[in-house]
Image (cartoon, rainbow, N blue to C red):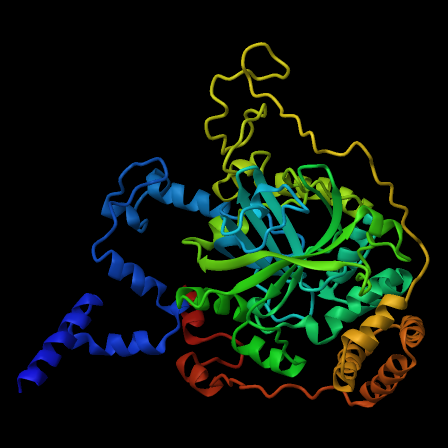
Length: 560
């Protein structure tokens, strides 16, 4: 009996510690069966059992309870109502053109291997060193309210808050990009987005541009394969695409590709499974990432770099700076750098995932960065996009702010923070304003990279025959392509078939056969509906109509 009493007392104390009482035991069951995304408000109330303060307007005026209603009053004399309404009209920044649907999380990067031989970058030197990071994961073409599970490339952007400034690595879940000429980028995105008249996705646009710019075929095959729909963001690798130049403290130059390798294992979803999940939960990826972090099952990735020396790149038979190819085995070595761990969800998703601003130009000493033309264009393009979305002071927004900053930039749309207070506003000056440093290890030599315009299908063929390892994977690729061609203009179909056949005869033949079957299928039947029939008889009884179309009340009015 004493033991039972002690157990009962212990249970009461546990329940009380959770913020509920024995009469509320159903809440314990609720917590046990519900995922963390759905109990966030309950958790907030448990942490704050009383209201967190008195309600105010944005100007700090405290709100009287009668101001929370506008009925039978003068609403525009109500400062709380006006403040609420006008802020609501402007509470969203412009949506990103691509990678708008996203989630974000904080974490850290820990160095696990000595790479001082290759780079002097402070963030990657000192085994055991931890650097705070913010990661934004996203899907390419969906609007903010779209589905996570669309068959398209996924973004994985990492912001390292280093002592030498922010380092941004913008990655995709595939190791190649869709184009190498930056002038094609606006047209590519226009073709992948919605046709402006019906405002619907149109594969005529996609395949027309794709067959006129065959460079894009390699990236296209990645998205149409199993890799196009990963099973959540934490079960995919991520690649920084470009070849980065790095250097050590002696000025020795190396050329690397940065790759994040998931420690959860790579998993992808079949199209039919993804469609079913989309119906049930279009936020499947976001929900998964939030839940595993709240459960302290922190997702992690190993950061490694594929390395070539300056002599190596002079003695290979391919262009190592080509963003549309992967490096050949045997021409590089792979060096692990450290481990990325995500361990904290943001307290406010908009404040982080929408306000964070990545820029591939955010580099640090020891990582001069890529030299290809596409990267140079991205340096400018990303900055302009962030200024448009967030204002010229976007780097002063908390999630973007570096650990250290001394600038001659002033004023502009808020936030301005301390606006550099009373420091000199021009450079050079004689009055102790911030001064630049000298980097003795920086090379004076510049690489000039010449890109090829030739159509090269070697890499798509390699993907089809080597990276896709089984016949089942190759068959699924063809099955994913064929249905998208059903509504495409025949001339464009033929152009694509020719290119697919040149990549591999089997690929072209499989898609051709599957497309023929798709074209023979009857049009989908109308969906099963739940109809609603108005009860006209009861309406007529309620408001009986006379043969002349007037009811009795109308007659009375006419007589008057």
